[in-house]
Image 1 (cartoon, rainbow, N blue to C red):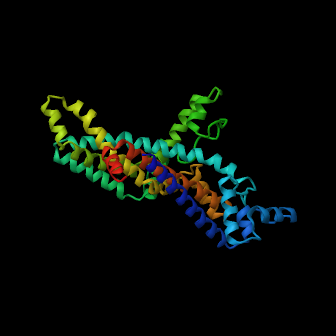
Image 2 (cartoon, rainbow, N blue to C red; image 1 turned 90 degrees about the horizontal axis):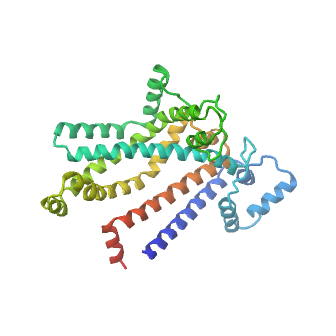
Image 3 (cartoon, helix red, strand yellow; image 1 turned 45 degrees about the vertical axis):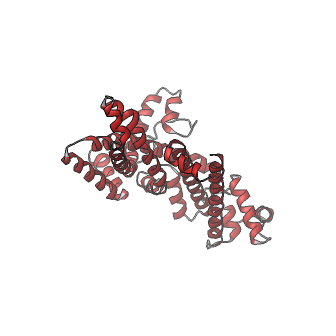
Length: 343
């Protein structure tokens, strides 16, 4: 198992270095001076230019420049934003918790509704309900996220005026940032309106979280149904039924835990798509996260922000994918058997 663990760590390192190499090459292709693209300083003084040259080894070979680039980026030095002239690392730290909050709530919604619906679709004998659930999931999987987001915004935000259409919280609430996660910060706040602010933050979160949750919801539902259908036909399930175990006990003790293993694997496989959808959702609902920040940087040609946004999102996807794969291997007996047999 330790050999497998170290192989995955090596895979993470190799993929990260390749990612940094692609970013470094792309940085050199930006239609500006290389020192400007790396540091974000448009008109550096003589001392600043010397410091940039020394930091990024711009007078040295391409290999040494790449090593210097890796050192700076992995140390958290992304330069300054070309537009705000603030440290990019500080801006990234400010917007990252909002994206994680949105992604976590959307994933929670997808699992909370997708797993029960998938279980129901697998166990029900009503053919009409089975086909209806499959039709709903196929429709949800096929609907473009930008169209869905704009439609929900128009229906529930503009026409019915039930939910806020943009932002993370009403600007009337002055909430101090402690964790960066608005739902937590409102509860930690000592302000007299903290609970009202929490309710407002929940309302702001509903539309973007539901929009983002549709894709993983459809996948979780279909994978759960298919996996549970296969599990319930296995011999050990029939043996449990022959011993007189109740249906609910068989389902929750033997059927569902084994059926959720493929669901975990499917979650790892769709992280890239989930992240790209998250960027679109953040732009539609003006959610102050990494996606919205990155798109704004692209529009404004803020090269340091572009590099930091792509690097942070990509590293997060790579690390989570490898973690989920390792977790899947740890809890799946078949994967563990194949792992030990390959030694």
